[in-house]
Image (cartoon, rainbow, N blue to C red):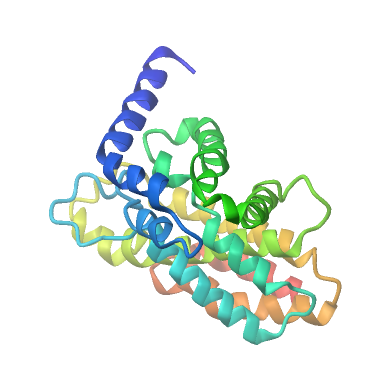
Length: 271
């Protein structure tokens, strides 16, 4: 990391902390077991605001927060629960969803093409350390057992690649992709929107490159999750759900031609 990048990160964190000083102070001093202030703080974290496709557009109607993101993820969890995939602890899934972005109260959200995207690992480390050290510690002393439970759930989610196959944490990460990517396709990467925002076609980066990477990352996470399932029936059931419910977004928002090899891949998984 060079000096300029260090200064950029430092400035960004200083600005975030200054902007949210009152909210964070209230969070630290008043948080209780029902997490009203925690949820309110999530509602202050703006998503997508640093994306290259957004920052030069005047009067952009795009508004999204971590609270909205978490709320939509919980709705997706309910959808998946209705599919009746076996051996999933949906109570743990719900808690992981609630807390998975908690550290962003301190760091903010880093989306695709954020100027700090190259320092994602560094910022992610700050985010992961912030949640148990600065937020969970503010639970009342009588709720220490609850604090311990929440901390373990949070660590389990962030350590999902290091543990034995963990269906719940891999599912939460996949749901994270489902919501973020579907929102992005509708409000950021849609061919129709991009043609209106950039009528001269002079985009800061080729959207095909970004969308291809998004699809491949999502499919990789899909595979990580279905590999934790022991039942072939559950695997097939979930892949069909994914194809019919989520993958179709890429077709509907202008990337049909690009999707052909990925559709073939999904069809092979269903054989």
